[in-house]
Image 1 (cartoon, helix red, strand yellow):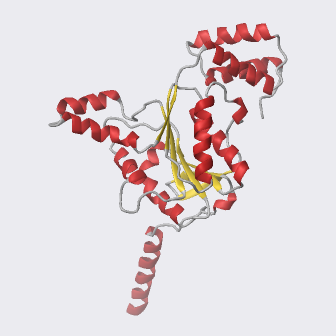
Image 2 (cartoon, rainbow, N blue to C red):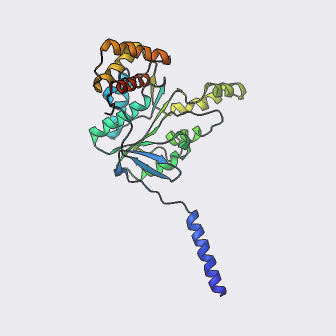
Image 3 (cartoon, rainbow, N blue to C red):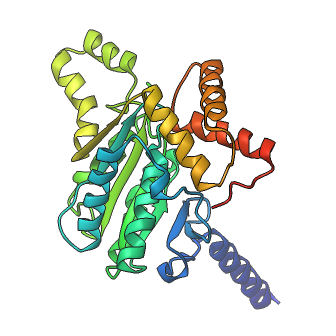
Length: 287
């Protein structure tokens, strides 16, 4: 009986240890899709079968930025040197849309070896773990994408990102690039940097330590508020693409009024106006 009790106890201990052990990684088959989302809760990449994106031809007013990011991505996809990219600036001007559109365009040009993986801002500290997955999948080229990346005053996870991108012994895998969008050029709030300057023994060194994060991005692409002409070009580009047959002067006047009520002109505002116009005309806006 004592031996049976001991065996039962050992069985329970083994079962408990199995439950506590990390689950084996799942969803690491990059051939499943062209885009994935990194989920730290289950330590897996979940395929995205239909990416929420707009066609490259619909992105107006950012031609130079589009061409620069496209060229950088094409070089990377071809195995040539390329830079991490930070797309920063005015809200609603197509920063994240451009990343997704460029990936789709290059993926079509080069086949399915270029993958887009989205990592959420709150999961940045897990980036080194994600990078280890790429080291074992050298047949694929990986763009890790973080949308709306920024850090608050008490947040120290930016140090993990700095080390992951261009620090540490292992360094960034050759088959990976990091693209991020942000409203802030240096990713950190101004008051955080000013507070460091006012309280540090050496203010210059303290600020340099904060600013050095954005230096990890070799490519800075600045997005600025668009002019009325660019805004209307976006509106009419969408209208033509979706076949919205309305009087041109009526669209112009309504689009200007729409932007005035929102106090802004941007690609996002243009898209919201088109959604309203298409709804009134009974037309779909699904590409």
